[in-house]
Length: 93
Image 1 (tube, rainbow, N blue to C red):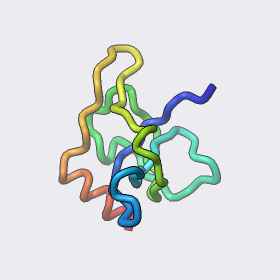
Image 2: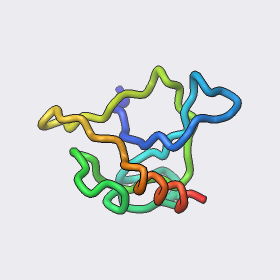
Image 3: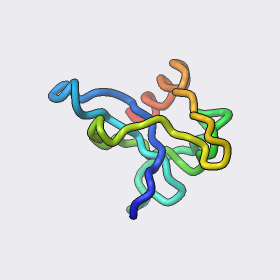
């Protein structure tokens, strides 16, 4: 069984605006050590999210996306505000 990983939706590919999203994944151990930044650089009060944001995106089908919930409290993580989303996208290039 694979547990879901948190991620940040950073865009929609122009070729598939309805079904696939560009997502910057969050993990404490990204495979192959890609460029990354601590999640606390973008989310000041993360709800049970820790680790680093991968500074490249992956194409994730909309059917695999859902709001992140803290496993202990059940509280949903709020989306990044526009300032921090711009900050993340700038670091992603």
